[in-house]
Length: 405
Image (cartoon, rainbow, N blue to C red):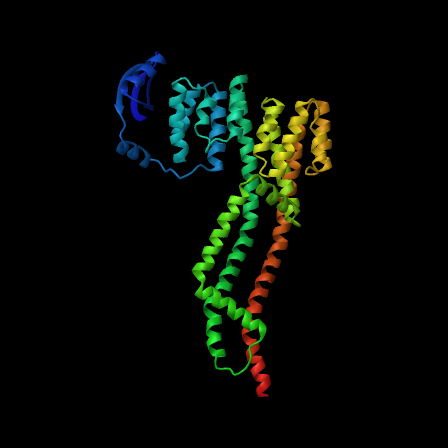
């Protein structure tokens, strides 16, 4: 489609300007006239013109979590104030800082003008708006509560983004330590050890086993570096392909949950994500079976996905959620008990929100403790590896000194 600049007047005489995606100028005129607007001018917007318009604003690549939070919250505010959807989208498109989101909004506006519903227009941009987003938008449109639903979406995305930022921030230092350790080992293997190896060639002694092993590792890295890197890359590609299969996902996710310290943390993250998403959907008026279908796809763990699918099947048969959740052994007893209370009292959404808040706090606390414990462990490991490399190089010198003495 092409882009056209247009100017038109409303019945009250107000002059409006905008950009529309269309096949021709006639289509733009027809659409505007269909909105009871008096068209005063329509002009083709070339790529050069678009570039000039955009250079006046600062865009960033991609769509950040904050972009979606701000967009949904502002759209909720405008709709709640009585501003029509198209006008709200037009206002927000002039404020967004994401180029990708800006382009998507132009197409969404054009689709809605062409007769699409809001959620149908969103479906074309699944890389920006998740199924969770789209399903909530559909529910909001059907119930006439789109503004309140969008507020729920903003709260959910904000909470999810906050938890992710806490985890990433906590993992930053251990990752840096790991990278420094890897670089230090490579420097030893590629530079320092070969220097010692040249010196040892003049020694008329049998080198210790540890020294020979380290020197062999150094030779492999020096002379077969490209092959080693190729093997590593091939292994990573194979692992990713395997991890994308159902069997691979199940085995990998089961392994993650079985890890000491890390496993319980991942379990708590999945429980918090499950409760937060399900609470938001229920409070927005989405039917419970549809809620469980959506939540199963965003759980982030294949085992949790399968468990939630089984819960949905039981609920479809007329059962409750609590029983199947407890049987799965993935959800702590407290979760199933609180859900039982929520189902019996009719306050399931509020109860799930409390579960989400509780486990989000636990995750934050657990991440802090793990980070505090991980830092000295990484330092000891890094010191141990470097120490072994240093000792392996000095062992021949000690042996030579002993023989000479």
